[in-house]
Image 1 (cartoon, each protein chain N blue to C red):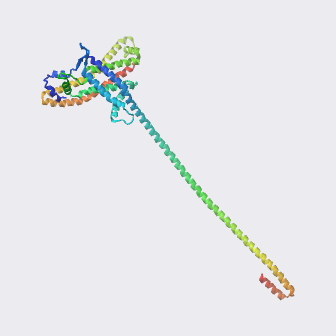
Image 2 (cartoon, rainbow over the protein chains, first blue to last red; image 1 turned 135 degrees about the horizontal axis):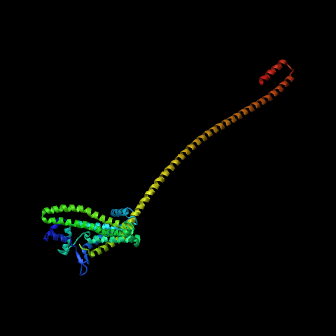
Image 3 (tube, rainbow over the protein chains, first blue to last red; image 1 turned 30 degrees about the horizontal axis):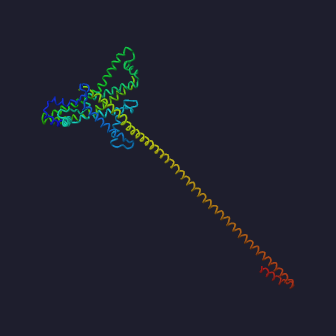
Length: 277
Length: 156
């Protein structure tokens, strides 16, 4: 975290340049005009790799899962499984095993893994990347501090939400609900109902994604500020190291909590889509 | 911090991960856990069943034991009864036999006595005849007569 800042300091960067370097993506334009057609390679590679590692590991256990005496690894995986399953069971009362519970497991583990990248010392990541890719190579290790990731997840959940609402209530039922809930079926409350639902449908993905993004982004910025402290000398290095350790420990809670909240909101939104008003 | 194609790429990655979990990760874990739950429930039920069966068996064995004890004491009582009966019978038999032997001996003795009496009677009559003959041959002498009579009597 903080102490590894020393080798970066010799680049004689200003604090704002240091932070800017750490907070910019490894963006690769896919077409000549770029703009929307840009891919954050760091975000994408990190998230896909983490997804493959986490779900691959759990798949290796699931493949050999025995109903008899479980191994310690299987017991741990089952612990996670039961934890997610219990949470889903309390919120969603349909057949959760066919989609919602596995989705919750995916969300929780994947987001948790992506959040955990915040524990990687920021300057170690920068050091490794600049070793391979040159001094100005950029690499952000925490995919969830990229608004694209959190928004992609939240939007996917949002689409699933609408999909399930239509699947359960029918298209007509869904439209009916848009206009007739929550205030009533009288025609003069239709606009109010529709505005209410519109705000709900807009606010859900925004709050869902921005909550996670904000937490992880803020965490990263604080790590960077603490890391920068090391540039002020020995006292700053020691203080930065101590505070960095403290923030890391506190961040363990945030990483787990935000993954949990993101998972719970996913389940709640999908469960709400199944219930009629 | 701009929205770009990364969003779509991440959404696709998310969809693939969900599909993978739904298809390959969740079902085997669920199956293993549910199978184990069922096995444990079955095992507990079997244990409960075994316990009640044990109780029934214990009760049954108690009843059987009591029955056996009762039967044994019955048999002993019967044997004792039979024993005394046999002794009594033997006693009665012995008495009857003894009586019979005694009666046989008595009648034999009587017969012997009678026979002896018969013999004596025959001898007495022969002697009387012989005495009469002698008296007739030698004249009747009172003195000789009485002497002969006393001699007869002594011979008797």
